[in-house]
Length: 69
Image 1 (cartoon, rainbow, N blue to C red):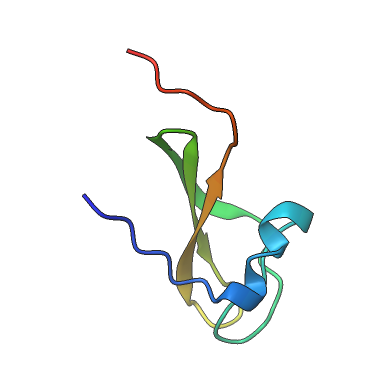
Image 2 (tube, one colour):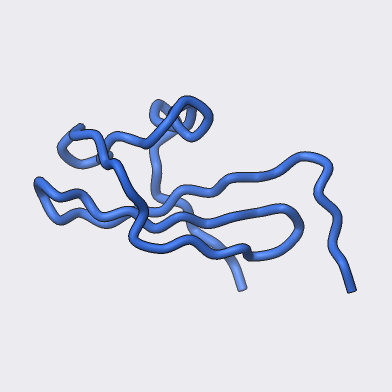
């Protein structure tokens, strides 16, 4: 399984500073639609813009996380 992240690099800083802006219209998105731990310290967040209904995903990587059996 491969994970495709469609968030432009210019928005990547927002994953550390707070909720992201919509890549399509630029409005701030305040809450995730869903979040999923996908292993190896990675969490995928699914967002839906309230203004333009565009959905997108962000990936958060937790450094130092280890896989458990």
